[in-house]
Image (spheres, rainbow, N blue to C red):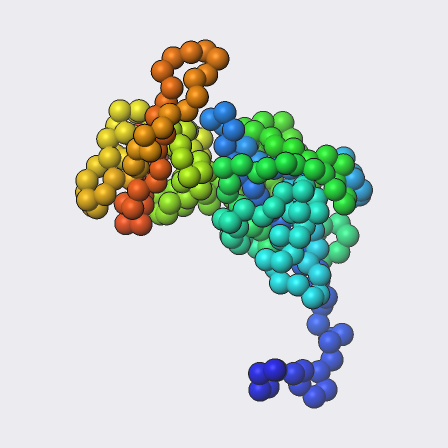
Length: 251
């Protein structure tokens, strides 16, 4: 134990307000060129029957990260992806009708969530397209806001890190990578220009993608199988794209 790591003499814990701590996890993935989020249907009140982000109360003997990993596994059967990071905390009074609750939100990105199996206090767990979830669902608690913030966080990180490659896995097509940007930025990206930016020599002599020599299996619709690539070293320098800036309407 560190020196001084003890409660002061006469410390009265009851003099301070008590509150609970929860974790909520936003898992984003791509499926058929569409951005998807993992949601659970709540089994009990509050918000019984409503869809929500997976999560729950932090136990006294675990860290926040441990709580997020455990809750994700218990409610959805999904193993926490490698990319799992805290991105915000929410503590507005009344956000949870049971008691004063502060939640720490996590963002997770994966190319494949694996097998989904609802458990503990979830009646159902499944992927929803983000567009459908936003338009059709009223999520429990303040999870609508948390989901919106997570998507914006991921959208910002696309131009600050190699997050795009976390959506597509070790090998991918150029089209699959382009879909990540288009879904998160809600912008159509010119395919030839996107390809040029991936293979550009500056600021690094290495390209952002390198051919594997392999191709995707042919689709039922036919056509030439798409070439597969892997991420190149240039991602360590800076991402290849900048987010398009919305034009202000003319006055």
